[in-house]
Length: 147
Image 1 (cartoon, rainbow, N blue to C red):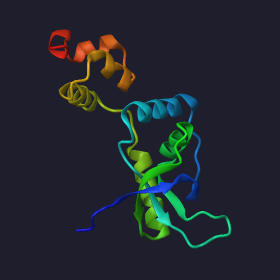
Image 2: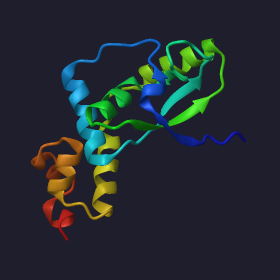
Image 3: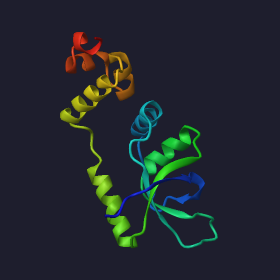
Image 4: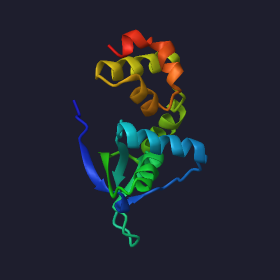
C-alpha cells in the first residue's frame, strides 16, 4: 500500500499552473477557517523539471489553501507530493473541484459534536465554524453544550 507522506514545502517553490478566481467572501472564509482550526487537508503538488523560473513543484490541488497561508503570513505549507502523469494530475484537480461543496447538515452536526467533545464552548464553536451562536444552540442545546 502506498502511504502518503506530508512534508513542509516553501510556498515560493510552488507554481500555480492553472490559477482560478475565487470570490472574496469564499476566500475570507478559507482564511478564517485555517486561522481558527488549522489546515485540515494538505495541498497536493508534483515535482517539476528544473525551470529557469525557480519553481520546484507544480500545484495539483490547493490554490485556495496556499493563498490563505500567504494571507496569514506563512511561508511553508503541508503538502503531499505525487508522482503522476500530467493527465492524472489534471483529473485529481478536477475531482477535488467537483467535490468541493458546502457541508451538508449531517457534516455540520458531526463537526459541532466533535468540537464539543473536545471541550469547546458553544461560543468557540460558533466562532470557529463561522456560524451564528443560536444556530449552534439549535444543534446542541445549551444544557448539553456547557456541561
